[in-house]
Image (cartoon, rainbow over all chains, first blue to last red; front, side, top):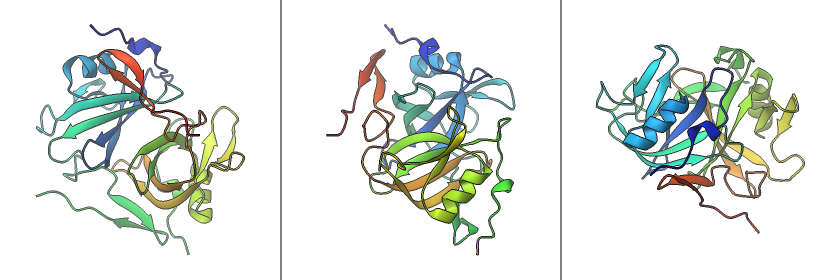
Length: 120
Length: 120
């Protein structure tokens, strides 16, 4: 039985909370997306990380169409209760550009540099 | 010379962009806080991670008062350009509760569990 209540988290004016996805094994930060109370509840219930898509205004079960699912390993809350960290088992790339992580651009020597190639 | 322009990032309605801080060595996700265009520029110029404090409406040079500074190692941008990842060299705890990371509460077996003690 789950006694944790997602309503106790702190959501922004749109009713959303940011969730950072981190790779269980490598520790790599894969992506950041948004959740509402229901997507937090669904993520905990199903073990499948489920965001809220702001562009589509719809639940977004990560990998549902692409197969690049995020299996929840651990869900963590920060000290202010206004940010989540999902430790996940990621299948394939987390990014829609086919890269393992969405953070593939670094600012080095004042310029943007691509530090990660798409997966093949 | 820095040719990167912080204005090319995507900010929310408040003019802010979330920035995730990750420990360079351990890969640990330390915290998430917000930046505006100027704090992005200051972070790049000074090498000291500088957030925008929403509660104080002021620049927040991490560790300026506590000494728990974040030295910037690498600043990364995600595919949508609306989230930043700062790889940092963290002195002491990143969290104001004196814990290494702000994400010290996990939801396990449906209940909140503290998984990290304050540093001594």
